Image (cartoon, rainbow, N blue to C red; front, side, top):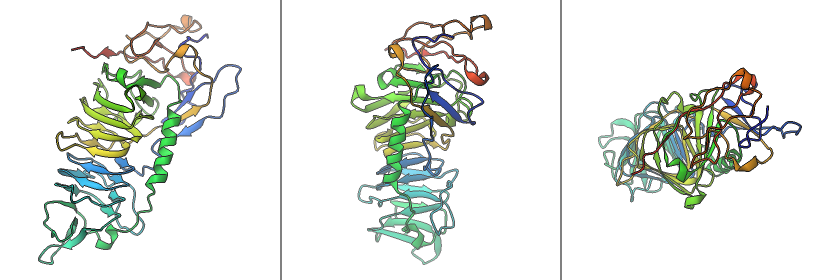
Length: 394
């Protein structure tokens, strides 16, 4: 079989890979390939729905899982945390999982709202100017709250729980090392940016914003895990994202989609459809200004979930469940970006009589210089392709 100039490498995806692991990269005939490196992007996330290296600000509305931030927490509205689950991380000596971990303190001076932790414990690293209360003004035992010093149990600005958590537990060390964890995240993000293959799409932020309907070659699943590397260098690392529609894709597919932003410094979701998949932006300030939901995990340098001017959507607990094996390999020929073309028309699977012919091309687009029509994969994987629709121009 001869290969299209668009993709000079064979891609191994199929029964030889563990479920949820996609083997990507180059393996040229006659060339000894380097040993593949398995990358589990969310290793160390400990089941948190969102993780920030530094600060987090919460305005609206809720997240289904737990939250961890290495810096300070600011409360700008009413925000529910761990609405469905407290997660799996339990700090040493605690009787319940840590549903809210704040490495710094709560910035009471900048806060005007409250956070309600509906399941699990709270952990606040710096308790200066904070009272941890387990009784109300009548000295009756109540669920645990953190409030500004001297404000009392019924303070409007507060972090409240539904647990009778021992007060001394709130400030106890969690053992989480955010700096070390994010150093690993950044290394993984850079490594993922060099992966290639039919289930990898390398695309610029400008071109991604030009896609109105984003469909996948096959429905994302444990056997079809997708990586989208978004290049934001054309806008100086700043990406304002109006998310496309994802026809036929739901929360059940979201654990098998990863949006990687290896060079971004700011990612802001400004509107659009519910975002399917996890956002992996360890070097970026992430802001959600869209009322639509996000189905997945968010890893970012800082988090603004909603703002004083714009309500964010709900963050649903659909953690990324895949992994990638990336092989070091040769550079692709003739500048192809790899993966599939988000705007190409559907292409039929080649027949057996055509299987030894060169891979067909369905034409060009403004996103990718050449489109990849279909690729017969080892281990019986199906030929891939999907239909894309260009965002209507105003």
